[in-house]
Length: 278
Image (cartoon, rainbow, N blue to C red; front, side, top):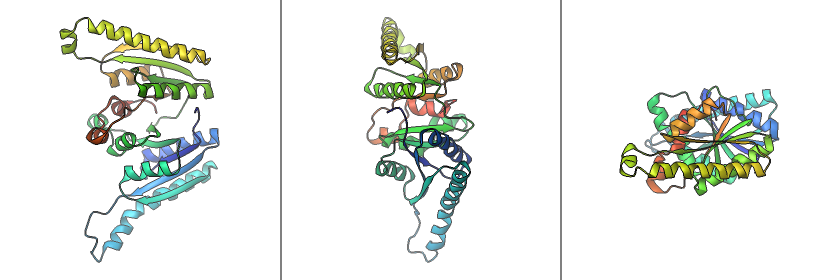
């Protein structure tokens, strides 16, 4: 699949989420896609027997209704048809469940401008959606645009990276993009000290992985450039994305279970927090 047809956009009324919505309109205009816009009312955790509970629930629902009303106005101005959905519950669960129910190709979410600490942690809703959904998740940072001319794909040779590579090549074929393939050797100084010859072996393996992807892209008529770097993976990836003016970064999200699935703490999550592009 090289293009998204069914798009689910999760909004909360914040400028970052509305920016992501506007960017999804561009995608829809290009591809004649279907857009569903979802806003979720958090579950009320107080005393359900209280006589004033109706007023509380109405107050909690107000931001959801306002956000969807604004989404409809934006869609009308852009001449885009959307379906709006307001649900109540755990936010990430409702997003994941609706994406499954609608058979969405992609979930689009915004990313706020964040402090260094919050960048390192990333929004828990976004992290949980990525951790629990089997759909593509496109995170759009503030003040960035969705573009396809230059695609950066990071690989470590795993099956999850293979899925990301196939996505990147599919998009490159559809949009006439150039693909930049990178692999990062991320090891500690302690590891190098204990196994001095291992670093050279890892670098060679990374180069082989990148060359294999370049050959695969070339066989599809796609121009590809390769990079192998050493260092902290998320930092190296985001810095290269900026230097090479990548318009979108494609990465795999490793399969997780239990606590790891909830917390993520992965390279992918950190890249999302620091990336200069979607």
